[in-house]
Image 1 (spheres, rainbow, N blue to C red):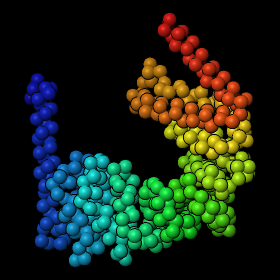
Image 2: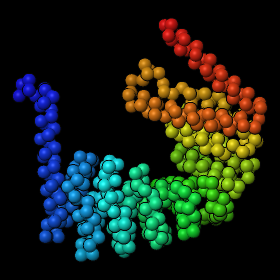
Image 3: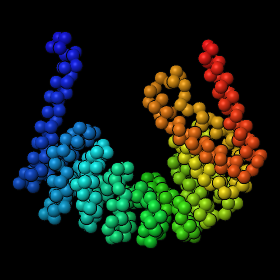
Image 4: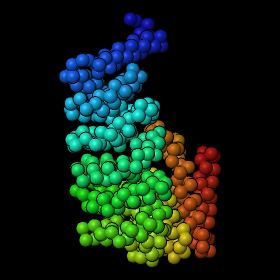
Length: 405
């Protein structure tokens, strides 16, 4: 091809030809869904499943060519074999793992009611496939969470499916954790036995199940006195729920678990269910949240830790005093203003993009925590102001020296 192979026109032609080939292949997959032989349809769906794995272009093409309505039709037909219905649910779940536009298309095709209807089947493997797809759809930010609450029979039925397997427990609790956004949602889940049904999952042998159950309690307890007061009296395998949360904050537990357990106890405390001078708050929750603010933690964890700590001690002067002398918290927060790092010191563009993305969140979290720390005590306020002033003086000297170099 010589010089022609290096021209932009060649790249465009090659891209166009490739796209045409992909589209033709996609059309072939969709056509097979209409084959009069059920066995050929099943094989077509299985081949489609293998073709879309990790291929967003193929997923988008199949959606544009009308694969979703046909897959949903086959999934809902009682005449379809269970294997075919299950494979349809798996393919739909894979399509949902593409772009946000994919999710929008699936929701517009009424995938949620179809999958919820599928949960009435008695076959566990099919139920798990439907739940896995529902989980993927509902955790997307473009999916309206209210769709989970449209039919009043859905939540109680999901509660009844929790006992079937670890997979149903993981998927359902993750759906609940992502779709509980308002006090009304909290009330619906509470009234249908969320606490009694989810509490035993905190001691599940599966980490994923324990973590999703913990996240459920975090969103249920947030600014909700009724839920928080109930949680205080819950026993899990003979142990108070608050003590289960305390164990989950131990240093040997994953950071995600420590932070979420601390949020649960924070919300219960702010709702009045746990006293601010309780040992589980003073000796466990507050120190855990301070640890989350250290520079050893990921930027996202530091933001979440600082904001949760600010919320915990906002109304209580004693907690503010304790926090101000714990692990050099006040001076530790100065590090929150060091992002993004100097561009010249960063060779990894992804790292720079990450720092830029979280710089505003870090500063906002630091100011929230500073405000909470100094809201009642003059001595703490002076310490906070001194820390901020010192940081800006050092920063000014650094940039002045750098500009002179």
